[in-house]
Length: 558
Image (cartoon, rainbow, N blue to C red; front, top):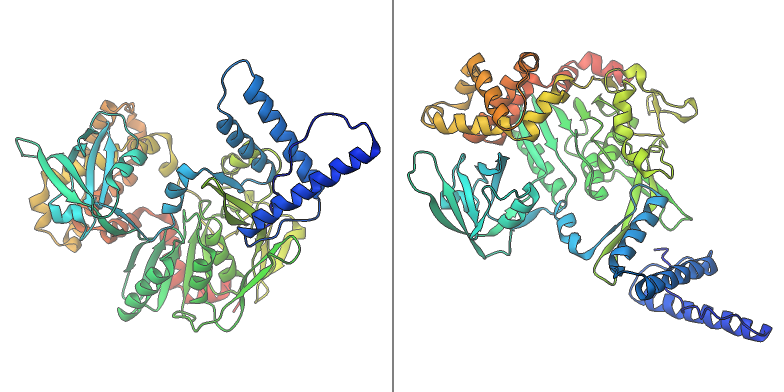
C-alpha cells in the first residue's frame, strides 16, 4: 500500500556550510528510509517512491507545528484530538470515501459487515423515550427467556433506560456483550401489576443480510439483500435454493437501500446469474498494483429465467457492481431510480495505534467500461448534499431530469445504450413516492409513533391475532378511520403536530404501514414484507416487468 513513513525531525537551525547541508539531507533521507523499512516489515505493501522528499517535508512540517502547539499554546490542548481532526480534513481533500477510523470505533464499524454478533436478540422501538420490544429474535436468548412483543424495557443490567434519553445506538450496545455473559432486564408487561425481572445469557446470534425471501406467487420469488456482509452469499444461496424447490422460475432481487460491503460477496452473487466466463467488474488504480478483473467462473443457480433488480438512490458500491454487471450483460431489467454513484475501492490498513485507514486505491468499472463513481471535487459538503440536489432538480420524480454526458455513452452486450459517470441508471424508471417522503409521514416514522401504535394494537388484540392464520389476517384486516385519528392523537402527544390534511393524504400508506407493523409482531418478517408490497410502487412495477416475458425480452434487446 502506498503509505509514507515518518522521517527524522527537523532541527530548525540554518546550516553554515554546503557540506553540512548535504550531510543533514543525507541523514534525513537515511532516517526516512529506515522508518519506511520498519513500516514495511509490518505491512505487506511497499511505500511509493515517486515523491519521498515532499512526503518527508510534509511530515516534518506537521510534527513541528503540533509540537509547538502542545508546548507553547496559551491553553491546554488535546493533541491527539487535533491530530485526528487534521487526518480527517486531509483525507476529505482526497475523496469522499477515504477515511480514518479511530481504534475506539473499529469494532462498531466492523460489526455492520459481520455475519453474527453476541447479544440477547431483541428488535426494539424507541418511542417517547421508552424502549419497547418489537419482536425477539426467533430462537434467541430473549425469546427463550420469555420476552414478548410489546414488553417495555425499564432497565438493562441495573441501568435505567426508560426516560434516560439514550440513543438507539447506545441501547443496542447495552444489549450486546461477551458471549456467555448475563444481563438482567426489568420489563413492564401489559396486564401485569408488577415489573418482571429476567436474567438473560447472551449468545452468538445471526446478523442476517437477506432480510426476506419468499414466493409472491407460484413462480415469482422475491429476495431482499440489505448489504453484502461476510455471510451474504451463503444466505442468498440458501434462500434461492429454497425458493427454487418451491417452484421459482422468475425472480425479483431487491437491492434498494443496500450500501454495499464486501466486493467478493457481491461478485459471487452476480456470478449466480451470469453464465460462461463473462466479466463482472474490473478495477483500475495507480499503476498495475491494484488493477484487477473479476469474471464469472461457476455454473450459477439462476443463469436462465426472468430477473428484475430493484435499485434506488440508496443502492451503492458493491450493490452497484451487481446491478451494473447484470445490466451490461442484458441479464436483468433494472427498475427504480439512479443509484448512489460510489465507485471507489477502499483498502483497509491497520495502524499502529489500533485504528484503521481505509484508503481509496482504485475505481470500479462495469464490464462495458462504465465508471460507477459520481463526480466529486474538493468540497466534501457539496458531495454529501448531492442526493438533496437530485430531489431539487426533479430527478427523483422524472427520468427526463437525469442528464448524462454523451461522451460517457456505452453499449450493453445486445447494443442497448447505457451511461457511465455517476451511478447506474435503471431501465425502468419509477418516481419516488412523494407521500412516503412527506414531512408529516417522515416525522411519524422517525419518532417511532407508527410502530408504537401498532405494538399497542398488537398487545390489545393479541389473543384475536393468534387465532388467525396470516392469510386470513392479510385478506380481512383493515385499519379504520377511527384508528388513524387515534394515531394522529398519539403523534400529537409525541410532539408531531396534528395535520388533518396530511393524515388524509397519507391514509393509504399509513393503513398499510400499521398493518405491516402489526403483522411483523404477530407473524414475522416475511409477513411484514408481504403486507408492505401492496403500497410499494417500485416493487409492483418490478413484479409486472418480471411477469411480462415479452416486454422483458424487448427491453433487453433479445
